[in-house]
Length: 154
Image 1 (cartoon, helix red, strand yellow):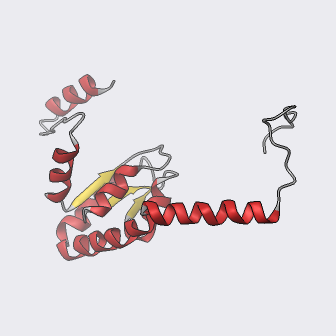
Image 2: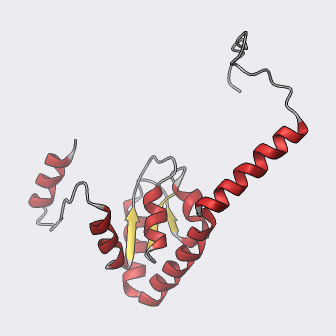
């Protein structure tokens, strides 16, 4: 929804920005493959798959400490405070000036993304659910004959 204002701002600042919008998976893969650094300066995320995609493609990742971002990249990426433009700029300059460091972060990302492989995630869920079932649960399910009364935040 902010595209028109952003295009105008880029034009006024004489800043060449390529607003791509939705991209087919193949085109996106080509962009990742041709990039050394990926930036997600988000202030709010849940579990940004885009970070996994970029790390899987070997890009050095710079993102923010927004919840979700930090958890996805761990030590394999660089996190700056959300909204701190100067910190973001400094880290980008650092990586651009030190291609070896960018490659190192890219390799770290490729390693980290392997722990999010679907089979490993499924095994982790299986362990958690299996452990819960073995230990039993004293919680009354909300479904069934009578719903559990709401007692506040759980």
